[in-house]
Every structure is written in C-alpha cells, then in structure tokens.
Length: 116
Image (cartoon, rainbow, N blue to C red; front, side, top):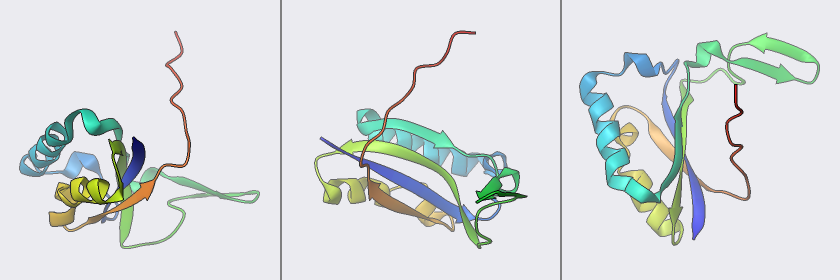
C-alpha cells in the first residue's frame, strides 16, 4: 500500500499549545478515525522556534515569511491518492482556518530511538 504525507497548514505562528480544548479533541477524534492507516504523526513547535539555513547563512525564524505555516504532519497508508485525499479532507485543520497538503511519500525510514 502507498504512503502519503499529510502536511497541516495553519495561521502563523501555529503553537499547538494554543489550541482550544475543542480543537484538540477534534484532532484526537480524527486520529482515532484514521486508526491503523496512520503510520506516524508529529505536531511541530511554533514557527517562531525555527532556524533556517540557506547556504552558509543561519537565521532565526521559518524558511519563508508566510501567513500560514506547517504545524505538523502525519503519514498514512492508503490504497491510492483518492483514498488519501478523502482521509485528509476530514482533518480538522481544514475547518479551523488552515488546510492540508497531501504528497505521496517517495522513500524514507524511521530510526529506532537510541538507548540512553
């Protein structure tokens, strides 16, 4: 089965800690609905915590100044793009002032955690 990355875009700076309890629960319900199709999911810290690198120059802040930023992403397994789009369309971000982008995953891996 193919894998698809679903990127969540929300108004900047997108601090997950600022989500209302209702919004947080909507995302939890969506995750529960996606169920075993979800391979992995990550919420990101606010875009204000980003450091961008261009060539030899490092700057504080996101790569681009934008009204919307990537707030998180998850990877799902779906039989085809249409099925992935159907899942992504139900993401609460699409009704909470943001949106989603769906991209087929070309390749990747997950490194197991290192022992401390």
